[in-house]
Image (cartoon, rainbow, N blue to C red; front, top):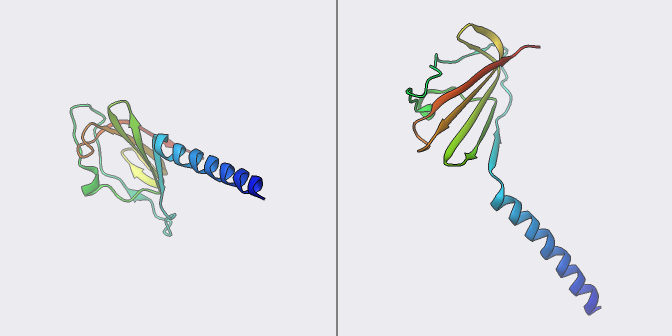
Amino acid sequence: MIKNLTDNLRFVSGILLITVGSIIFGGCKTVLFAPSTTSQAVQLPYLKNNANECYYLDDFMPTPDGLVSGRSGAMNLRYYSYRAASYKEWRGTQINLAFYSSDMRCWSLFEEFYTKD
């Protein structure tokens, strides 16, 4: 009986170690939002794809359908995805925008693309 209890404790501690390790060492956090209930496309603001431009995204960006944030070296990264959005010359398509920041406040756009069905 003691041997079974010891084996069970080892198993549980091993699972806990793997879980905690994956949480601590995981680089990206994924946050998903509920899908939009409206069929209209979200109008995204015009953003310049330029390292000299700084945007405070939390102040004006519409809530995305998907948001992934993480780090790469010293840079913080955010990937915004919209299922149906209008952005620049793209109308009513899936839009993906990627930003980087060194201070988590001022973000610069480094990638923008759309997905067509």
